[in-house]
Amino acid sequence: MSNQSIDVLDCGYVKLVESYGGDESIVGAARMSTGGEFKGWDSDAKLLKYLYKHKHMTPFEMCGMLIEVKAPIMVFREWQRHRTQSYNEMSARYIPLPNENYVPTIERTMQTSSTNKQAQGVKTVDRDAAMGFISGLKYDYQRAESLYQRSLEDGVPKELARLILPVGRYSVMRANANLRNWLQFLTLRMDENAQWEIRQYANAVGSLISHLFPRTWDLFCDD
Image 1 (cartoon, rainbow, N blue to C red):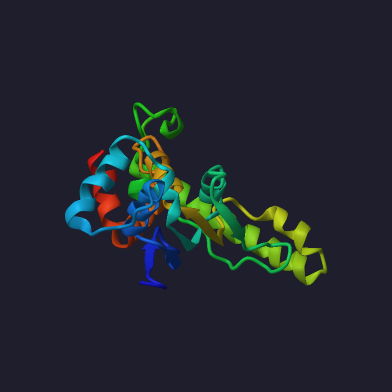
Image 2: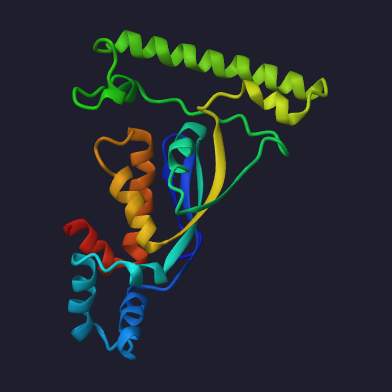
């Protein structure tokens, strides 16, 4: 399953780099306490369910995955609050970031929430207002890119030229975590109160996990 890639938003993706262990690894780790090992799913499916339902989560740290993510910087700033993951992100100190910026759809721009304060506007967004926002956003993206490129050409250090880059600019990172911490990430970022954009990435991460650790994923979804 290595290198499986899932498209997200308009220019982003989540791609599996590598994984280690599997559902069997969880059971095998749990049986270490009694000197045992994985016996087969006919007998061990109940043990896996017991471990998960009763929050015995240490064995779920014995497997995991490394992924590559292309996302707007604003998504990374939320994502990287999860300090149980390890990250390495493309640095605009060393290379210019490609001219790719997140442009939400009209439908997304009109999407507000009556319960989530972060997703509320001062009033309902109509279609004309949404189109105006998107048009202005594209214009400012172009202005920022023009200044960025001109600054680089004039010899401004890359670490300063990047100051003009918006949080909608796409960047790329790798993120690594064990399964326990991926599930915690999904619990928070698949929640309806999480920002819509990071929920799309969380759904893609969940799709990878569902293929790599299908029995654990079923338990997660039933929880």
